[in-house]
Length: 326
Image (cartoon, rainbow, N blue to C red; front, side, top):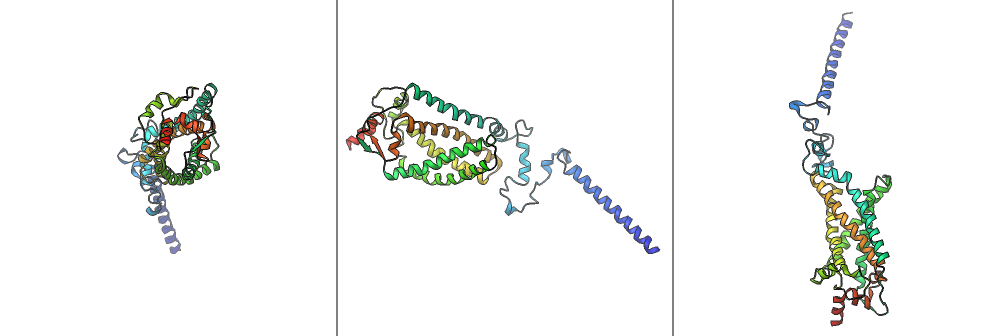
């Protein structure tokens, strides 16, 4: 009988201790780990915990500058109107959430409409293609298309991600993301080759200013010599945006994809990526229009390397003089 009473007393003591432990743990959870409850010295939840650092081994963290404690700390800088907003958090949230997609949408609608108006009002330039002159080598053609195809894929898949929510998200956008990554590698290789191949021909000349002042003659139906070398000022502009701008997008894209920087640097990279993207999309549409629609047969020069003599004499007059002087 005494043994049973001792056992009962021990059980009651154990139960009391267990209850006390549960109460202390519950109070600790309620008042120390509750994001809605002020912490010691009036600090917020994000300021007194270490995030998920304790749950993820350092070697397994994708980016210790972001995930874990820094991730929780960075929450204070997110969102427009955040009381503790600092760095690029507010401007990034504003632009990414409200303006970037809209600007891209405006560009892919208004730029083609502008060129449609040009085609209707001014029309296509036509030249005699009887006698042709070789202006691009086979190497030029191969490198151009090996850089151009992945570049176009980058633009299309980039837009698919920008408008991912409108396209339903899911597998389509993930596929676009994967293609975007693969195309980036291809462009990084052939873009460099293209840069080395044509950067001398794309250097600015004094007569490029004259070309810009008359918009390359594309606002007139007259056939008179236009001041331009092998590449006109518009093509040169596209070359530098495509190469240097493209390389900047490769670098900023790599930062975002691999996330090897702090949150503020990643915001900066995202801003740079989108801002250059506006220029790239507008000029890509321009380049395609000029090559396919604005000048009859212009596309053939980068397919077989030959351009009509009259076209060179009119649209690339300085280059035509160089060829004749050689």
